[in-house]
Structure formats: C-alpha cells, structure tokens
Image (tube, rainbow, N blue to C red; front, top):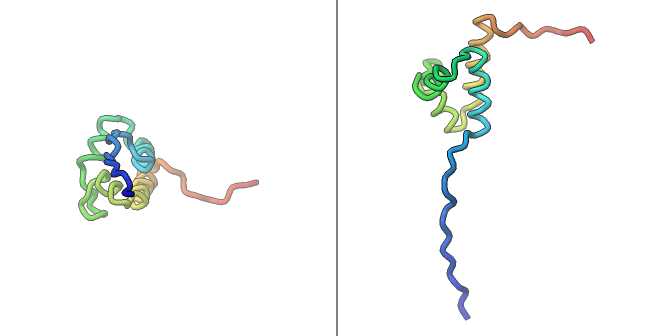
Length: 89
C-alpha cells in the first residue's frame, strides 16, 4: 500500500581537482615552474585586478575564465607568449 522509504546518503567527498583547477594551474606553470610556489599563489595570493580574491576562490565560484585571462595577460606581459599573428599556410 505504501512505498518503502529509502535513506539516501551523499557520496563521500573525494578531493580531486576540478578540470578548471587543473587548467588554471597548467596555465600558471608557464609563469611559475615551481609547484610549491604555484600552489601557494593559487591558494593564498589575492589578485588585485580580480577583486582581491585568490585564484582558488575565483575558480570555486565559476570565474575560471577571468583567472585564465589574467594568467595569459601576465604571460604576454612577461614576454612568455608570442603575440598572435597570421601564420603562413
């Protein structure tokens, strides 16, 4: 007569980096090759031009494209990325 009640538990949280986290850290590696320094930046250094938030907090709230843009601009400013131009086919 009545449906049975099933108790659903949430799945255990697995600490796996989100794809956007991996992409941001990969882009940051072009600027900072040292992994410890890169992780310290990602987790603890506020980005002035992005509202004084860390890259980690920005990625967590879905603003990964802004962080990627910031990193790409920084790489360009440091001369680590060639300017885009038309290539011969």
